[in-house]
Length: 320
Image 1 (cartoon, helix red, strand yellow):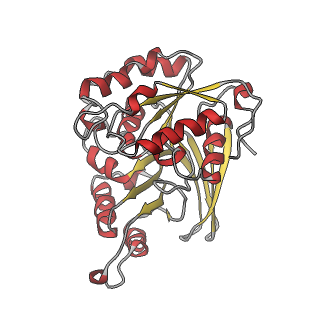
Image 2: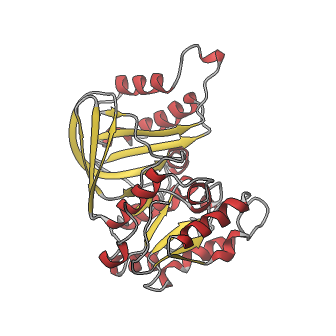
């Protein structure tokens, strides 16, 4: 582990608004790993909750979300056990106003990805509420070995009011700035045309996915393009597309082909290579924060600011 002891107590409040965690061993390993780092893990009972493929019935999972506004000030971090499917079943009944009010006064640091993207986009659409697209309990903190890169970048995003991500990327040089937003591409496509999809003008859209063949990735991006979403952005960043396996039928068509097509059709920069998504190695992005993007044709830098962070005293001890 890369963490150290000797810091003010930090708590993580678990929620399970989506799929049942079939890998229970991973979830409990994640709890132990966080506790070994000196972090209190609350609401652990949601780990075992189940109704069919979901982590409880709709009312139970909706309750996870509706009660967030009432959490103690000593519970600053909220994290889903896992993703899967189930969030969009809840959005029509979810009343975001209590949580929005809480976030304006004493913000929780709400972090997750995958299916959780739908809730993150709803909060961004309704109130410009910043949440974090990053690791979750079972898949990341519960991995057999905790990825040091993911651990460092998680705490960097949650403790530093300004930080910079740097990575190798192809594409044309550019320099631009705007609201950083996005997350899981399939979820963005699924809520396009609904009240839960934010309208971001001049943003920096970052997307990722898992188990989607390159042609499906292309199709979803073209859906966003046809809806006018991509044309309103200043840049598009392609993160990790885990298990996007090609086959003989593709005859050379791959994710690089997708990026090439997008560059032909879009008048905005299309960057690749950011470690962001369902891989064990992932950055944590504050969705709704301000981003300053620079790319020299080989390396990209994204400077992020304007997101909530942990109190300074609570932040000590988590970074190398």
